[in-house]
Length: 214
Image 1 (tube, one colour):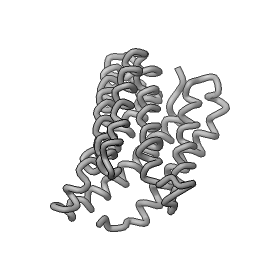
Image 2 (cartoon, helix red, strand yellow):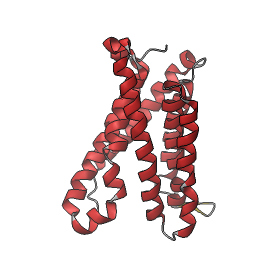
Image 3 (spheres, helix red, strand yellow):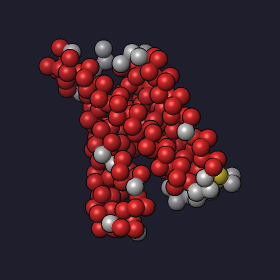
Image 4 (cartoon, one colour):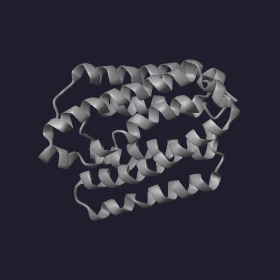
């Protein structure tokens, strides 16, 4: 059982709301850019977080099933779109990764518990996202704009996504193993999970303030 960390958890939610609010403030400047959808995405993340906070069912739909079939897929598909299609300009890569990821969802029909689906979902989703993160880093360092990296919106997205999605990958996929065999390690990892999420939303906020549109 995870030890509660109410201060970190509240900070995480506060920074998530902050990122969404800053995104809304900058939305008028981004209305002619694909970055407007990043603002919309952050607002959506906050709304679903607040709506499902403390809720276990809605119209017969269990919270865990909502996130497994919709909440989590939306996150991965959005980042595939942002990285592969909009930043890397690789349309075929976007469709390929999206197809590979979505193809794993029907596998849930063979499992009675959502824990297995979460593991498969996050394993495939994060592996594909990690490839895109590496490709994005390679694109940035090969570009002369690296000398002014702080103006690159994708730089902030990358440094936020990497420690959270990739860094917390074992925590989410091997949760049951850690819980049974390494409970103290699991609780320490949970602290990292919350801190990484806080850092990610701080990075997203920074992308609006310091990042420039091309």
